[in-house]
Every structure is written in C-alpha cells, then in structure tokens.
Image (cartoon, rainbow, N blue to C red; front, side):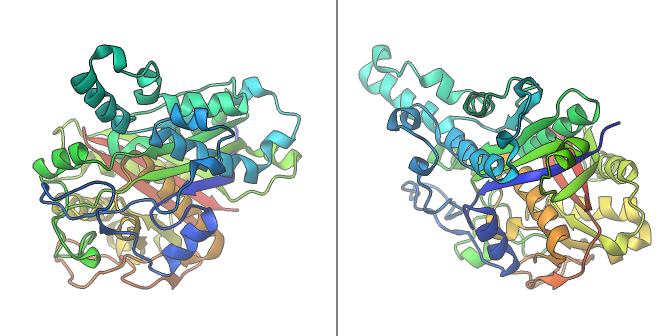
Amino acid sequence: MNRVVVTGMGVITPVGNTVESFWNSLVNGVCGIDKITRFDASRLKVNLDAEVKDFNPKDYYETMQEIRRSDLFIQYAMAASRQAVQESGILTEDLDRTRLGVYIGSGIGGINTTIRELGRLTDKGPDMVSPFFVPMMIGNMAAGSVAIRFGAKGPTLPVITACATSSHTIGEAYRAIRHGYADAIIAGGSEASINELSMAGFVNCQALSLAEDPNEGSLPFDKRRGGFVMGEGAGILVLEEYEHAVKRGAKIYAEITGYGNTCDAYHITAPDPEGDGAIRAIKNAVTEAGITDAASLYVNAHGTGTHLNDAMETKALKSVFGEDAKKLHISSTKSMTGHMLGATGAVEAIASILALKTGIIPPTINYREADEECDLDYTPNKAQMADPVAAISTSLGFGGHNACLAFRKM
C-alpha cells in the first residue's frame, strides 16, 4: 500500500481567502459570522450567515467569459484549487497527467444559477434560458472545470454527501492513491448556497440558528446552541503518493493515515441519537491510523451547534476513546466559519493539518455555558498550545452520511 501525503492547500472562507489569513483568523478567534448582506432577508426568520468577503474571481480567471460561465461554487473551487496547486509545485515537475486526478464535490451545486435561470424562464420564456445553465448548475462541474484547467486526466470524481461531501472526496482520493490508481489528486469541496431559497428551506426544517447577535449564532457544544449558521467557500488539498512527493522535493504538510465512511441508515436529516454510524466511522479511521494516545490527538469536530449533533458526537467520541476521551483536544471551527456544507470537511481538514504543523489547537469561540451532555474539552474561546502528533476530522451529513479523516504529523 502507498503512503499518502498533503503537499498543497488552498481556501476561500468567511475568515480568510488564503491559507495564511484563514489560519491566523482561527487561532485568534475571529468570527466570520454577521448579518446577511447577500440578499434581502427581511422575509426570513434567520438573520445571520457566514459570507465570503473580498472575493474577486478575476484573480483566478483569465477572461470575463470564463467567469460569466461559472457558478459561484465553481469559482470558489477554482480559486482554492489554484492556490493549492501553485503551492504544491506539482505542475512544475514532469508529471504524468493521466495519473493526476480531481475529486471535488459540492453538497448543493449551482443553486444560484438555478434560481436566476428559473427567473428568466418565468419572466422571459424558455428561449432566454442560458445555454450554459446546465454546465453551471450541475454538481460535478467544479471537478470538471479544475480538471480542464490543469489537464488532469486521471481518476476524477465528485462526491455528494451533504455536509460530509469534502471529507469523503479526500478520503476516496486517499484510497485511490493508496491503491495505486493515481500519483496525485486535487481533492476537496466547494459551496455557494447563500440565497433566500436555500436558507428558507433550512429554516423550515429547523436546522438554522435564529439568533440576531453574530456572537450567539454558532455555539457548538454550548448549552445555548440552537442551530447552525450557513456558510460558504471552498477547501482544496493536493494529495500525493509519498515517494512521488519525496522524489521531487515537495513540501509535505502531513500524512493521511486513516479514513472512515459509514451511514446511519436512520433518518433523512436527524443523526442516529446513539451515534452508531459516527462511532464506526471514527473507529475505522483511528484503527487504520494506529492512533492510541488520546492526549496527543486533536479532534476537529463536526460541531454544528445543533442540539442533536453535538450531543451525539460527544457520545461517539466517548464510545471510541472511553475514559481517555477527556484527554482529547477538541474544537469546532464552525464557531468561526459557520457551516460551509459541502466545503466544510476540506476546510476543517486543512485546519486539522495546520494544528499538527503549528502545535496550536484552534478554539471553539463564544463558548459560555457548559452542557451536561457535552462534557469534554472543546478548547473554549482561546487557542491552546498542545503539540498534537495526530488529528482526526469528523463530518456528519444529512442522509446519515458519516466521514472521518485521520492525519499524522510529519
């Protein structure tokens, strides 16, 4: 079996549009949540979201024509991919492009394009619907567009598993390289679904926080929690076979050492309250990675700030680690970024890798009131130095999809 390492990373997030600015925001507890500005939200019960700021697609595309033909979720994916690929330096080498793949997913895809083109259909008739509507809307086009950009002709696959999407893309890319099907894969996820329709749907299924104060919006593991805050953005990693990376002298951030992929088979939105699927996903990743020391492990929790998720996830960690669960260094970076849906797993994988690289555990901000159902160490409010040697990142999606990624410090 091949070893798999991370040699490049890129992000577009509500707290920074580069890896450096993103990480600085996390360790300093910067909140990316604020009042909704993307559209008139006066008809909605929800007040808050976590929007990407200061994003200019012209920084990542050569022509305006390319931008006009790309939904925002594709633009975010392209921006983060260009950052990751450039940093990895993988295209400066004599690379066999038939062994370079792209695994980029999106939970929702081009919904903003769908809404716009439906308006054109309603107001002006079918002849005015854009001929680019379909390629802008379909969820695989972030992966397709990135593959075209970099001439990646190897295994290329989007994944759609709601909030677990980009943890699954990374995990499946890890397996493809591990089993020899590719030398490198550009992997992650992207989401741009902040609009009135999406948020009305999430409000009506009672998933979103209705708080008005940005500092009370996303409250993972806090007893006051009342739902998640919608975020957006992209996270992309370049995964590479270890010997391939060493041979070309690549900078290596961390090694991927384990992956769990399970399903609750319980409910379309609610997690299994006993956490069976999450327990198995975490256990599979931890076992494959050979992780035994909870005290030197960082857990980037799914931690959405919904009552059911946070209680179940705590229960799952206790089931896997037993009494040692109290030694875990845990945090939910969603307290700062909001919930980026299909992008969140990749962004949190990057946060996990940077925790290993720097020895810093990012905080769970705005944590004030302990909950008897959530009684572990969630790194409240301030970053801590801990020097972990391993990290896991959990992602738990609608439909009962569970993913867990394990990383080791290099």
